[in-house]
Image 1 (cartoon, rainbow, N blue to C red):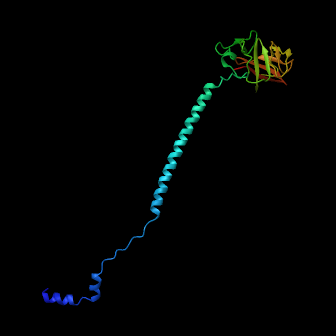
Image 2 (image 1 turned 180 degrees about the vertical axis):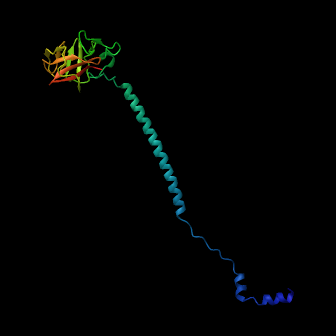
Image 3 (image 1 turned 135 degrees about the horizontal axis):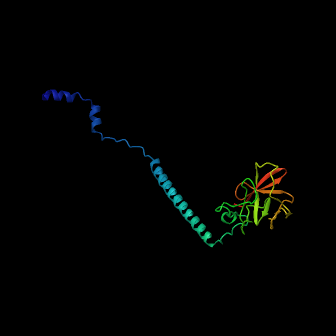
Length: 201
């Protein structure tokens, strides 16, 4: 392109374009975003609340554990309930397999004597023989109803008490009994059936 061609090209430019080129450029302003600072503040507040809640939960748990430990240290030792079963004292036949009943058939056994065998789970039907108290298990034996007894209950105490002498029950007199086929058991005939009684275990 020579000088003339350049001059002609410039001469063909509209005056509007020339005037527009002289004006300063106008920049469009961006609209301000008002919600961004609010979102940042809300996020910081949420994190702060979570931290405080976690700290308070941990503090409350520690306080509870410390108060429970202090209460346990200052509380008096709980005494054993009077009706709590005592295995070692009330099961004297566990190691020596009991003592066979002399003159009995069918391998029947009786429990050995124990000074503490009167401890029971709860007052229930009970019989004392040879210093051992036997308690009703609520189970019926398969023994024939006509089986020969080993003796008869001769005395009784009220139903809320435990027998205190041999041949005594807390549910009446005249009941036949026989030593059971398992160690430490006794069978008492009530209403034509042999009910299984056992020394406290």
